[in-house]
Image: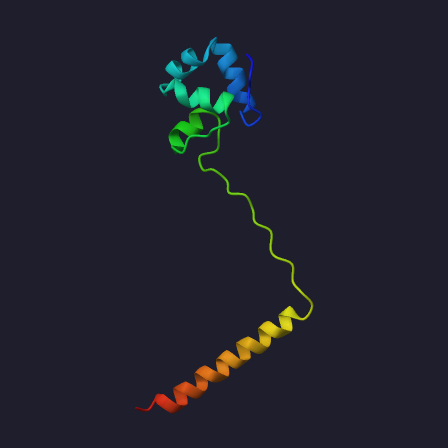
Length: 100
């Protein structure tokens, strides 16, 4: 087999080679051959969870973890001050307008 995408699972590559062709593998699994072909050659993963399992992918696609932004010096202290100001402001408004 040629032109295999690096995102294609090894188990899928082995299963397709054992079956003889992408069409035979897709027919045996009961899925459309385009899903097999797109994953093998382009690395495009299907969204349907049941089809993903048949192609040896996890049921749900994992999202890439986002890294937290770097804190600048004194950021925690500033956040604490802002929260304290917010609490005091809401208390003042409740006292002033709460009895009406």
